[in-house]
Length: 159
Picture 1 (spheres, rainbow, N blue to C red):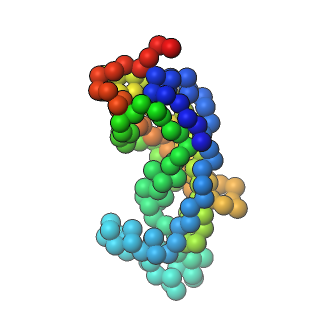
Picture 2 (picture 1 turned 90 degrees about the vertical axis):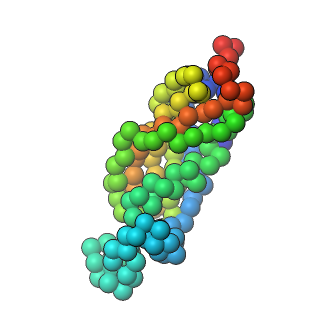
């Protein structure tokens, strides 16, 4: 875990965060995601058919793996003096390997850029989600997070 004050966010550029904790991608999680997104494709939810399919079992939706980023990043960076952190999007996402049901994933991030602004400070991170026991990552993404200070309008300190 990396801990820093809001005014020191810019000093993190190039810093490696993680790896974080392992998180299991269970069939139940995959089924719930399929129901929530109305995407019940057989490679995700039909265990018997998927066993004979191209991946040798069911696999998580790529967007399920992407949606786990807040959980996978939890605790890797703690910023004091921040009221909230808002997901500002992703500039690039690539799904590189399927995550089979029952496998565990974890994230490592590199702080790529930090840009102070009027509403807060934008932090861009290059995140890699690895699959336990595999050499190819599940995904890589460049994400954007807006760190909003506890006191609105307060710029990062120069110290």
